[in-house]
Image (cartoon, one colour):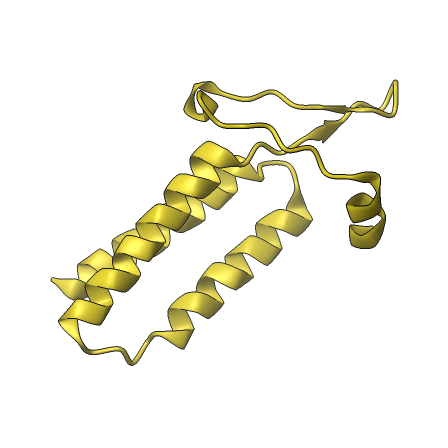
Length: 106
């Protein structure tokens, strides 16, 4: 039973990242690598309680990725970014990155 739950959580997280970062090949690749890494780090966990806690964490991460992250798209004509939240994002707050954080990530 635990194995099916782990596989389901893994697939759910990957689906969340694919939807949220659609069209952004770098974020798609990096998020898939990170999800895989986290699951690999916990491959040998055998305690049912710890597995349940990790599955809950994975569920919360999936919810966060799906409902709290909106990928901005560059408007090639104006050079500005457009954000189009979906219905899943209702109630989320908007945090715009500062110019400093954008420079650091670029």
